[in-house]
Amino acid sequence: MKVVIIGNNVSGTFTAQNIRALKDDIEIDIFTQESYPYYTRVNLPELISEKVTIDDLVVFKEDWYKNRQLNLHLNKKVNKIDSNAKIIQIEGDSMPIDYDKLILALGSVPNIPPIKNAVEMKDQKKGVFTLRSIDDALEIRDYLKKSAIEKAIIIGGGLLGLELANQIKDCNLNTTVVEFFPRLLPRQLDEECGAMLKEEIENRGIKVVLDAATEEILGNGRVTGIKLKGGEQYDTDVVLIQAGISPTIRLAKEANIQTNRGIIVNDFLETSEKDIYAVGDCIEYKNQIWGIIPACMEQSKIVAASVLGLKKVDYKGTTPKNTLKIVGLELTSIGIIDPTKEEGGGWEILKKADKKDCCYQKLVLKGSRLKGAILFGENKAISYVYNKMEEDVDREDLRKLLELYIYVCNNCGKEYDEAKMGILFKDLPEDFKCPGCNGPKEKFKKKDNS
Image 1: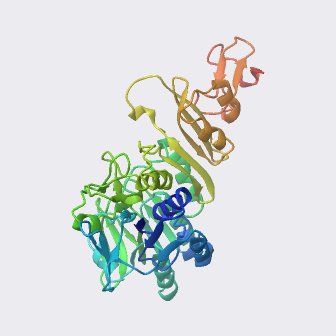
Image 2: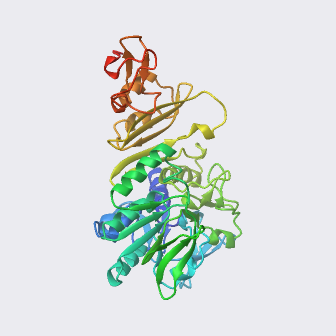
């Protein structure tokens, strides 16, 4: 059997690895328009600031493919799929490639919001860029070096946008992040933690403008600024747009494969066409687009089994999960982080907010089951959270894990429970009075729960 994979991103590469792990006598060919073997996109901003090299980014060198008998074809752009003849056509090649099973790991492209002049100035290389590939990073780096750049604006305060801002700031540029939503990382953080992150980023010399929709990019021969929908203008020499992703679907659509926002797949990641599968950022499953690495990894296992006819596990979606560094600070966000948006009752939050040390830890429970967490600035609880997600947990274990304590007033027995209050006891003002007897703060002692 011959399996052809289009795309050498995380989903395409790990799908190939998983197929090979299940069966060693299958021909596997990977076609990509990239010039490099599989590399990590997470550290692309560091290529701009020259903290890493291309070689540092490449995860699997050519020997990795050869040792697993995976045929990697670089600089090969697929421009047509014929599902009836079971062939694909490579741009510039006269001979088509045949397949028995075809896997579309087409990935995604940067989303460009409807901003006046954005697409035109990007295409005409007038100082507007998106970052998705090594070539993008090299183009941005060269532009910053060759032009007299002093100010930079990043449109988008998501994960990659913030890390990009951090690296651009390290290129000694006056850096501003413009975010459409009222807080940073709205999918990963709640309002309180988002405010802490904003303060920390601004302490590093990066300006943050929230609740701001960019209406127009200004400039003629090159970028000179941006204008917001409220009329406010900001001067800049370069604009970097990091406003989410759009699934790559054109190739599938032209082959009459069913698409909506993404390529539509079933529980086994099969498309509407026989023997054609899809995986990763390009797919739409039950009206949802995932676009996160954990989903790509999980899907790659399921599609590998499906291709081989081993339909033992079906896809049920992926719990949102991110663990990474934002401007040098550890961040883990997993599952449900804001239960006020969820239906039904029975929700409980245990939270530790230490603004002085820029540490925020929040655990979300429904009944006794752990449903979500935010761990920012401190990751001691990460292994516990990952292992216990969607399982029953002991509240006392959670208290010890987050180092949350109960303080008791010696006068009246009134308790101050850090797990339920918005501020740690040590951060209360010295003139704090007991709400039970109006006694002073020093009359409280830590409760011994041992």
